[in-house]
Image (cartoon, rainbow, N blue to C red; front, top):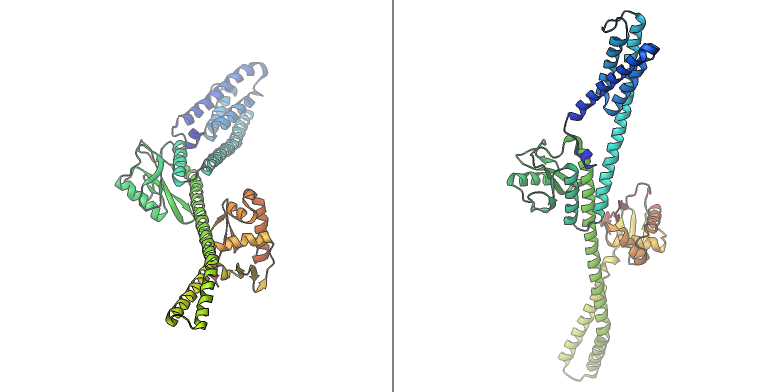
Length: 446
């Protein structure tokens, strides 16, 4: 399959098709010479049609047309009077030769069209299988270097070339690939930088070309360039011919999706880490407050008692009372610090989400949500504008045991869109990131 995808640059199969077409016409003529003395010439012309059809099916339209012309000439030369000349004496023979030629041409066109459709179907099937195979292998990759190694290996095998992936991180160093040398010459580095900044193909054999050994193709999600894939052949010829560009683009789309997935998964892990840290901090602050508040109340009561009794140094008692009041305010502020982010409603279009009051309104009217719907919406609202994975939303709303039950999440999202979106079929608030998760499109914070 790899050989067929890479393409055959040799003209010998086409020449062989013409030779085979002529051989089949010669075989049909020999069969006619054997049949004609016994049964006459009436059925001889039909012997040429299988040769024309076979040439069209197995060799293509060109050999089939050659077979049609050769069949008409051979029939005229051997089976019409005067024999062994290309002259035709009888009108019936002329009509027979013309009909034979027309039928052969029409049959060759039909058979060649069927052959083209079959070849196109095979090419599409091979292309789809190649894309699906790369996508399946990329699913197991958990880091950008793993993606670079798998993608470069697949492209090197498919296009029979060297390949490397350069991430858009500013250092122009390949993060993985299959190549004789993983370092770039200055001209190659310049071409790679141009592809990263412009989002266009650069390098050998392309319109925006500089004297390089490599071609560089951008790996993009939307208009954002995540990386470039460099490809080169040892013999110096362009590694990707124009008719293979569509296949390469489809494969690079899969690489872009994998890189974006890894990035989003990393952000999700970082969000989870920060959330856990904030939770620990809030718990610690609450614990400190619970431990110190009784002590501060005792100190405050003792200070007030000393002040009422008039005993001791009045200035010192006043100072102690002031410091105790300050500590009490500090503890109150610390206790409220972790709740500030949830006290302010979050605006998403005409929808207002108040996590502190656990209420949702649309155009000022209350919206009733089921507990699971609110749990999903609240998790999205805690990370506005961020993509949350299916697993994270399921873990939050249903628990760790239900992380694989994506149908539960789809039902909840459908219910939320029915209640919150103006046009549920064209959502503007809860947006889908295919194969990854959902995000809340926030317009402004109250």
